[in-house]
Image: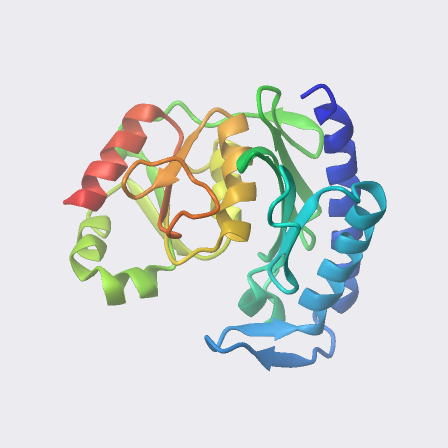
Length: 257
């Protein structure tokens, strides 16, 4: 992994490109379409991904690329970049600033580097395996919280969890010292920076959870699926992240009931 520092420099540049492109569309007149699952996609989603893909094709022509909007090119390659151009399109199209840009680098399907960019906030979280995590170049790390009853807990996609796992939802509503409802990547970024202690998430795609997992793990946290398995391209999109192994174990126990 001797090239990782250079890869991090490239990742930062791509985050800057994505942020500039996204801000150019934000709170403007957006052409909005809806996918088969009724999720929205805007000109911004397509435009940001196109710019990042162009950068990758220029600098890493032998690598695979998996983007939310344009799909998977080079699925059989050992090194893959994964892109979510606008994580939180519903936030973006409604003028809410907590949308993100996600970028990950995988080798043999294992996340090695992740970026959580927050274009409207001017924040860029980067995590590199074995090298730690930073926010705008300054080191960050997770909290030391190891008890759920004292934890700041974020529940992402709470409406979907309530619909599909009502008993779990009820348990979540009685858990944590402080709990908040949220969506998308920012709660996981706040966990990496030590402000949030645990996050439960649901119905995600690889381009949602793999970049985030690299940042959280680099910051010292723990993130798995709801069964405690490591995350990969084939994971089912149910995710739980926590600051410490003890807290993560409590979260898994809570999920299992």
